[in-house]
Amino acid sequence: MDFVIPPPAPSSLPVTGTTARFPVRRIWCVGRNYAEHARELGHDPEREPPFFFSKPADALLADGKSLPYPPQTGDLHFEAELVVALGTGGKDISHEAALDHVWGYAAGNDFTRRDLQAVAKKLGRPWDLAKGFDFSAACGALSPVAASGHLAQGRIALSVDGVQRQEGDLSEMIWSVAEIIAALSASVELKPGDLIYTGTPAGVGAVERGQTVRVDILGLGSLVTPVI
Ligand code: MN
Image (tube, rainbow, N blue to C red):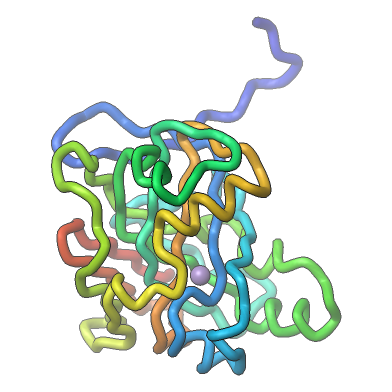
């Protein structure tokens, strides 16, 4: 096929144990999925169904790559998250069948321009530029389910320059991975290559230029992001 301008390179992630890569189609994110984090942002975690936002696929930032401090913010926040990668898709996927669609898991960091998000919330505007800026979707290597199984529990933690800032357990998610997939697929058709960031535990905060953020999830590799 001829294109009138060069087509963009596809986004992809490395996979643990192979040189082959996982192609990324869309990046979905779920908000406020740990009770303590919902409370720290001033919300009641008991009464809200899951809600979603997205980032561009080319916002991916690989493990070890530097994040250039983004423009138009003075409050860049980290958010350690379990990332789910779908190997198959569908519409109206049942809760019971949902995990069959998961190809693998990775440690992620949903970088956020918190000040822009606060303005968007106040004015009832979209979150896109608070969440979907360049390099905002840090993600480590994918661990295939075929090799490591599903992750329903396990420590998730984040440190900045070696000082722990976030710690939780995957079992504390308000909405499980299966429930998230079922809920999202009721709204859009999911397809192979979709990633879902599943929310962050309490302790989110700012990171400055010159600091290095590290996410660790039990059973997955770490994700290291220097902010420059
Ligand atoms: Mn998040």
